[in-house]
Length: 497
Ligand code: NAD
Image (cartoon, rainbow, N blue to C red; front, side, top):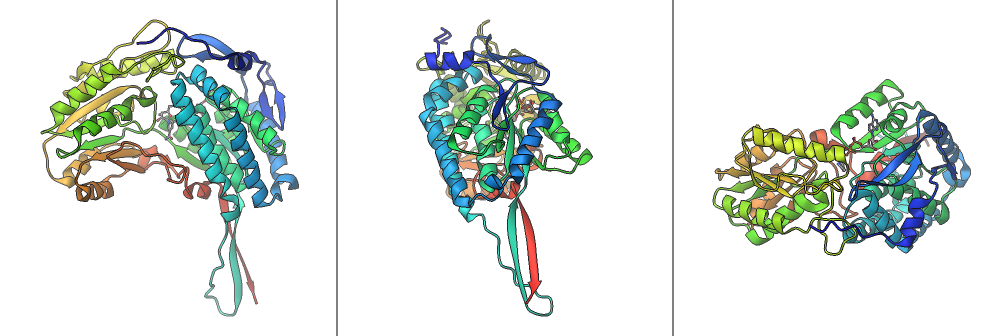
């Protein structure tokens, strides 16, 4: 444990002390109600800033600004290569402000500073640059028409329009960038709603987007709680909601869309991702991969490998190895040197993780290591490994979204039965397979019902690899070429010659 509180730099201190506004129509605005909400550092439990607490009225103003910008020729008629240049400039400005943005992520989310820099910031910059290559390649097709006569028929791909993007707190900047970059590349206008716990990096992103040269109103940010997201989902002039968060809220957004204007919806939701370890696996790398798969981000990662299936021959060694890795982890305040795992996001979330783990213990799970809160300051929870599990237990079925791993033993050698067990979840976001036998690995990968599968690595993220879920893990894909299906409408045009 390394809980001593080191302060961020003076630049971050100055940013935190600002009178923050929401970015609407290219200007900083306070909430119509004048209300503010507190922003808390989860590593200390202390208030570090305040931001406007938006409401439906602010959403309405932002929608009008985004609609105006969408219709304005300065954006609607902008050449695709100009949109590329703006995105590239945006990436350059983020890179120039990398240290400040990383510190903001650490102070607001609690993640260790190197994780913020190398994981979140660097990969977000890479994603924007990858996306900057796409505007000139979003083409339609010429279509051979079979109706009598001669035809010229083709498709155009139009931007979907005004897009509201609602993101969670676990990767505040990265989750925002995954959504903003492709929407802007496609020619949409955006209203971003960061999570109420982590609004700060979104505000700096808005400032940098304006500096990069995006016309006013193309990228807006409204801060506030769930009621802001709900107002977006039911707004009659919003064309699409792109959402990352819980399955429960995803469902509410679909209902609100259906009850209002049938706006398009894409969803990145929860997961309970299986990790399947075969007896021939390189156990050393499997153990460190399992530990990284569940303890990165303190388990607050939708792809977390939270459900391990270990073959009977290696089960004991896996449990022991991961427990040893858990105990060796340096948990602490994200600014402190050498810290590998930070706090949970809030006191409410700490209670949730703790009560879900305790429920598992009441159902018969044994705690191999962890299973308790760490200090009274900040929201730290010990990296935890649970065993003696049955498939019907809540800790095996439900997403805990904390550093809590369930390890189950399997006795079977039949691939179909192992796959059935791994697939027995309402989710289908990620999975990993650990074996030296690539025939087994690829056969298994074909049988697993999940959007992202790692072989001998739990999660492989790349700007070009599509990401998203099967079943209740979501609708649609982010990143890669597939993301543009979420931000473009296809239009058929035909004329007899
Ligand atoms: P959450 O669903 O409570 O909140 C996410 C966002 O939705 C926040 O911005 C919140 O203000 C907003 N919101 C809340 N109520 C709303 C409503 N009625 N209408 C519209 N918006 C509303 O989720 P959370 O607790 O902040 O995040 C944890 C969840 O997010 C986990 O279940 C996790 O799996 C999921 N998640 C998924 C991914 C992914 O890519 N699949 C990534 C990160 C997190």
